[in-house]
Image (cartoon, rainbow over all chains, first blue to last red; front, side, top):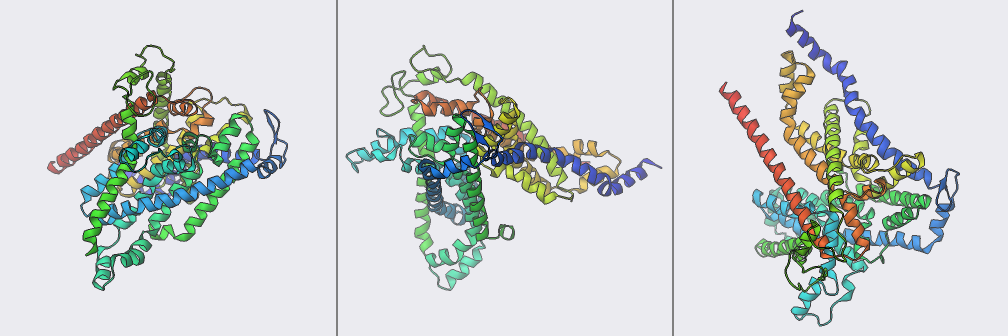
Length: 298
Length: 282
């Protein structure tokens, strides 16, 4: 057999026999890694939520105690509602603040270079540490903060607004600034794919801008809104740093509860909160995916 | 037409939006030049100074403000990010290479990998801390935290490589095989140079995500703090402008990293172009 014949045989062999074996060898490490360090830990959270918690230890005797503790306590139930409330508010604010930006970048800017430049400008803040960006709101919002100083200098207010920092509002402002870009990106992407002829046609038929926005632009950008909403939801629901830094411990999200419970070695209770968080997140994602069929749209 | 009115309005809006994105950081940058050590993290600026930058670098005289544990935690963070980058890029390239063929459980494998970027860090951290405590494994930044970091960055590396392989012309590989070159040499000499820009992007993603990651690290790293954990620790105590100065420095570091990436990227593109031209001449 000449070398070239051997090579031909090798090529024809590749997909059928060697191919499948080598494919599994290639994918196995990633699958094993994700199973060991993601699936097993997640299963462990569910399992441990039914364990017996003593003062500093957990024992694998199954019980519903921690679940009862959670649902019997006002603190925990309140944090559940706070999480849902903050999540909904941030979802709305990121959409309202992000959509016009996406509209401008995706639809009104025709120049590709300018479009890219604007998107890059939106992404640059992500090159700063997330925690630093959260912390940067403190000198902005405080009683002697930049916003109060500017408003006072401009003569709009005479007394500094104290409600800006260490409230629900500061947490919402902080989260909106950090996560709004995740809303802008997908929406701008979908808007950029709208065929300008459709809008032109609607305009020729006498539709005004609001009608075009309502009947054409919004529906066509819906998949982008859903993707953005999934990004924002997943991140806001798992949050705890922004509320820790900007609420002065007044806003306790489920994430903050987990941090506190782990800090006092209450592993079982932390796991209960973890399971509840996972369930909420699953429901939210499933709900959002029902709005549009992403596989078809993207 | 309305768009003639609407466009300028939206342009002004976008300018305000960018101000909203950058405003806090500008204020933070200004306040990092506050006088020290008495000057607090607020206006007015008592006197412009670089005291807090000296404080960060350990050049300031000892004062009531304790220095941030930058040196050692920076070392840990960069090492961890480097380890995570290499591991997740290698695994990402391997998995994406596997995805070029059909195999049983392909969809399940896809969702399993992508799940890593969807599950919130606090849950992954909690889960791995539970596994570690119940099995008696000690938690360290280089062991348990490293494992959770790769869980997070691998999906990004994988998706980047998947996108690259989607646009990849497989006929050059087939040509190489048919000339009798072994698959491994083909990968090294033909495939890898072609996908190298994608590999660079995957590395960049993995490094920056890991370098800045802290929700996953919080529970899984044990006592030794990484850089984000050191910053997080300042949340609970009174903050001083040294944190702001530090924020400015890390941002500069990130931009330096981005510049290195841009240079490597343009070099590899130029090399690819030159190779193509040479081929055309021959």
